[in-house]
Length: 238
Image 1: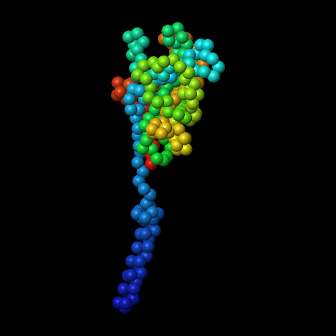
Image 2 (image 1 turned 30 degrees about the vertical axis):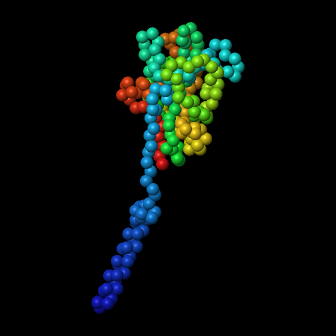
Image 3 (image 1 turned 135 degrees about the vertical axis):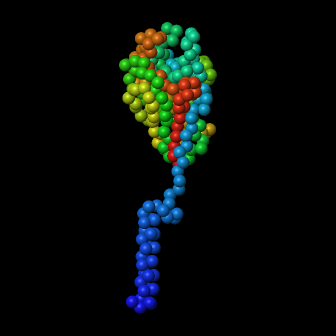
């Protein structure tokens, strides 16, 4: 073969190989021009004792449309027993029938896009009639909870202020709910907080006694810190 023809053939082979490499690189996302930006998972844990807790309302003689009760963050003492978890369902306290739900709030001021996933732990199912767990996002942040019982007042704005995200079949272990990005935009406060409320569907069935609640127990900042388990948290990828 003549030298000129050999050189021409060699250059043609090199060009074909180069084109194949470009095509493979594009198909595998190897091209810097086609490569998508890297995503990062952001996790925000509940920040302290007053960023989770409970809302209690009276189940006895409540006027229609009103939910008279209290907000509570921090640790509860019943006699010598320390209650460092939240209760969802029906309970008795000092002879009164109460309905109670868990509250959580998170500072997501760094959130800009993407669905947000809320996660906490169901510690125990206290009664077969407690029903299921419903997870709501509050349409307005409930604010920091008091470190003890608040003054009894109409809690309707919080009690009725949730948008249902999901229903969870009761079982001890991790529970989670996804908050769509559009809902996050709608419900995130001006200060960057989003609030979650967890309800037991059987909350209208009274507890048998003070020591036999018709309820679930859920993890809190205090419980997770003491037990060395994962804190209630939210996370998103962006």
